[in-house]
Length: 176
Image (cartoon, rainbow, N blue to C red):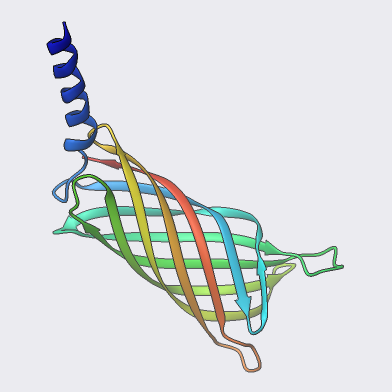
């Protein structure tokens, strides 16, 4: 009885960890932003009401993949009843590291950020980002992951400071 239980436990461990998605498997991922801190000049604040997505497909060629993300956060200045929308849009290059026990994806993205008030553009930035996703495999083809993005924006507008931001995302990944 104890041998049967030990074999079953070993097989379960092999199935959930040992057969986790490898570099050879194409995968699809979907993430949502959960936190963002944006700094323009010396003003820094957490954005509220984050909405949007990040989609990715990985291991298309070797360990490389592509991603696209679009999300919006609202910033309400102190004492104001109105908010300013910060719209983030990036196209990403993904690099999946072939580590068997944890799924690590590194990424680099280019895109733009716009600040809008009541639909009118206030400022815009050309942006780049670097990010890392760390995922815990569940079963052979699925993972749950956490992402951390470091964003740098160069102002397109005279008189507007450059932008620095960080974004935290959570998501899932399914491999084939």
